[in-house]
Amino acid sequence: MASRANANDMDPTGEALDFAEKRARVYLREAGRRKVYPSDAALRALARFREAFPDLPSKALDVLRMLDELGSPATVLTTGGRYFGFVIGGSLPASLAASRLVSTWDQNAAFRVMSPVAAEIEEVVLGWMCSAFGLNEDCEGGLVTDATAANFTALAAARQALLARNGWDVAADGMFGAPPIEVVVGEEVHASVLKALNLAGFGQKRVTVVPADEQGRMRADRLPKIKKNSLVCIQAGNVNTGCFDPANEVCRWAHENDAWVHVDGAFGLWAAATPNYRHLVSGFELADSWATDAHKWVNVNYDCGVVLARDAQALRKAMTISAEYLKPGALREPANQTPDASRRARGVELWAALKSLGKQGLAELIERTCAHAKRFAEGLRAAGYPVLNDVVINQVLVSFGSTEATLEVIRRVQEDGTCWCGGTVWQGKTAMRISVSCWATNDEDVQRSLAAILRIARNVRS
Ligand SMILES: Cc1ncc(COP(=O)(O)O)c(C=O)c1O
Image (cartoon, rainbow, N blue to C red; front, side):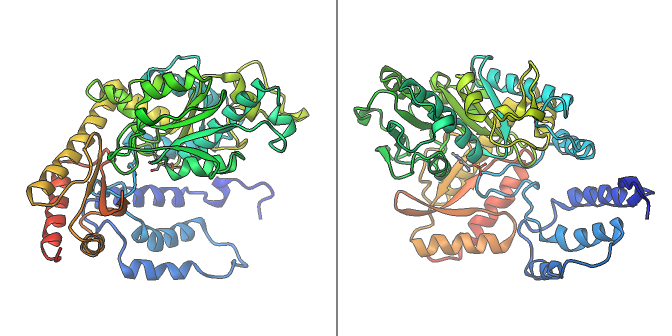
C-alpha cells in the first residue's frame, strides 16, 4: 500500500470521478421523464445498503457504481420542476457546477487562514444579500446549514444583547438565574422558531402569542403590552399561505419598548428582490436580525442557511470561539459568526447562484415562480376547488372537500408521480400545499401537474 495516499492514488485514472460526472449528467437528462417520487422497487432496493461494515476495501469506481445503481433511483426528484412539496428549490446550474469544484477543493471555511477564498466569497455574498433585502451593509452575518440554525443563531445574539442591557453576561454566566426575557411570537410562528427558542434556553412554551388573522398574519391591532427589552419574532412568508406579518407596525411598537425584533424569512424575505413584490417585505428592514435560506427559493443546492444581525458585536460575542491555536486575524472570521466551527464552504455555491442570476435573474426567478403559483390557483378555482389562501407569493393551499377526500387526493397525487404535493391543516381545514420554488419549473410542468391533480380529484368523491 502507498505510504501517503491521496484521491489520485485511490483512483489513479480518475475513473470514479468520471463515472460520477457521467451519471450526474444522465440523472439531469432523465429528470423530466421519471416519476417524481421513487418507485416501491427502488425503495425496496435500498435494503441492499444494509450490509455489515466491510472488512476489505473496495475500488472507488465500484463504490460509485453501487451508489448510483441503488441511490439514484431512490432519490426524490426535487430538481426536476414538478416537485411542489414543503418549500424546496432545485439547484441552479452555476450552483451545481460550483458545488462540484468546491467539493474537490474540500475547504474548511471556519477560519480565513484555512481558506482565504471561502472567507472572502462569504463576505461578498453576505453584502449582496444585505443589499437585496434593503439592509444596512454593515449588518453582520454568517452561513449555516438552514433557517432553523439561522433562527437559533439570531436568537442567541438577541439573548446576548438583551441580557447585557440588564447587566448579565450570558456567554459567561448562562441562563440559570438570568433576568427573564419576555418572548412574543405570532400565532402562526414556524415550528423552527419554537425549536430555536427551545435551543437558546427561552423555552418554547414561555411565549406571549399574538393572534393571527385568516391569512396567518400577526394582528397589529392585538399587540400586547410588553416588558422592556423583550424579544419579538415575526415572519416574512408563512410556510402555508406565504403571507407576511405587518412588519412596520410591529417593529414600531416593539422598538418603542426597546425590544429586539427577529425575522424568520426562510423564503419570503427574497420577495424583496423584485419591485413587483417588494411591498410585501416593507418594514422588515427595521428589524434587528434575520434568518433565511438560500436552498429554498434561490435554488442553491443544499445546504445553505443565512443569518444576519444589525448588532454585529452581540452576534460575535454570542458565537466567538477562542483557543491558543485559533487566534483570529484582524478580519472577519466565519467561525465567530455562527455556532459551528469546521464547515463546508457553502458561500461558494451561493455566490455562484447569485452571480449567475444577477439582480435581474433573481427578480425573474421570484416572479416566475409566483406566476406559476397563481396559474395553479386559477386552474383549481376554475375547476371548483376552493383555494384557502390569498396567493400572495409562491404558496397555494387547496381543499378537495372533506378531510378524507383531500387526504385521498394528496395520496393519489403522490402515487401518480407526475408531480409531488404535500398536505397540511390550515386553521382547522385539511389542505394540499403547492409550493412553487424550483427554478426549473416551466409552463409545461405546471400544465401537466395541474392536469394530473384535476384528473385525480375528479375521481375522488368529495
Ligand atoms: C417560514 C419558515 N421558517 C423556517 C423554516 C425551516 O427551514 P429549514 O428547514 O431550512 O431549517 C421553514 C421551512 O419551510 C419555513 O417555511
